[in-house]
Length: 554
Image 1 (cartoon, rainbow, N blue to C red):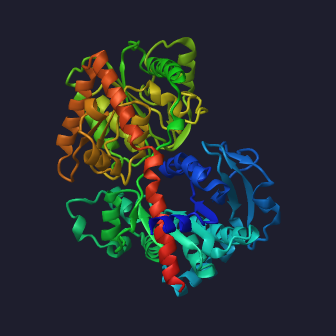
Image 2: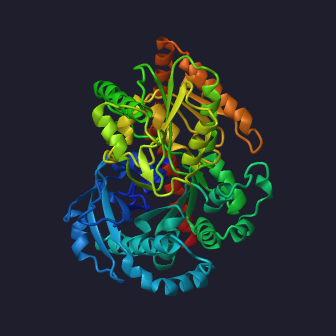
């Protein structure tokens, strides 16, 4: 029976996956898709097509898209699409080089009121209280569904041989549109974090102590999230297979969306993103010099070559990502007198304006004296209200930093062209000694997984899917698996601060052999998270989607 089901699954004629982050690097979902692409490409070949937004211009082209007009039977010039929708086809410049379609969707905006009415009539989606990026997400999603249907017809693939995979609420209306207009296609919907769960945490409410008391619909009304929540919940209930990226998120969906995902699809990593040993050694050496030179120019003092570099990174969500906890843990570490000087990097994009010219001049001259501010590499449009900048400034004014710990805030995407660091995130990661991701809300946790994949030990929390995976499969110790998972609740903030301080102090006192043990352990842990192991969950999701579709259209 298993063999028959495998053969049936191999009959997928077209696997379409869409996200706002296809060829558009703005968050963690980009990492999910770009790292699993090679494994999917090996399984499905050119039956696999990613679909993303064409938000690029000739002046600002996507650095990840290579246009190939002849692909997909010259679909870019031959598809007849309504609403002024246009597409470009090509390859995504990542391991596997999968086919990709970029969709221009601006023409859909003027039809959204009509489409919202249809969504209400057909599925009960409430778009009445929509605001912000809701319209943009829905316009893209509907355009994507229209392209999916047209592409299947153009390639002569029967609808019942199509599997369409939608990621996050921003594509949810596309799933519903496709289900109504092409019901024979099997649909998969993945939530990487519920919109209402993220909002509860972002508004400072205690998610965990009161977890079973929350009602998603009620909280959506209270937090003005009705449109997004309604759309996401409806897509979850209407998908042929609904998935979440971790057991943590699966429980959240069950509580807030009133449905448990049929399959949990954890996020893996692609080892091809990690440089070979010789290149890694060069990147580590060059990256450390870059970081220490920047810090020296900012602080007006020389940093020793053996300075311990600790970093955090990710989305700029001050409480959700544990940035508050990280900064307070650095203050705790400062008073402990660690074994060596510590340079802490906050690599978190903010509302950046431009690089500080004073810093560029100081770097060119080799540094002369401390700059003001001495913790920030780029000007911010809102420096007086930026939560990270305010907390660093407060800690410095209180004298709780500048002993053995110095902090540098790099508030921009590390894409290699920021004007100060000028090195991409993955190329700077080897230079770091240890990372901290103290998340309060983290459905999976790519940043700690990326860290260990690059052989950099990390401290994270049990509120992340990755942290739960570590606790379920490894000994919870930096020396044993390269990861330490600390417990977080709504009432143990001070204890968590102290525990992170403990871990960083201990690592600062580690011998060279202990550091090597920890780095080797981190790399070994990452090998267990290779997509070649985790992709089986997607096999299961596609099977579930096809079986439920078959039952639905009988």
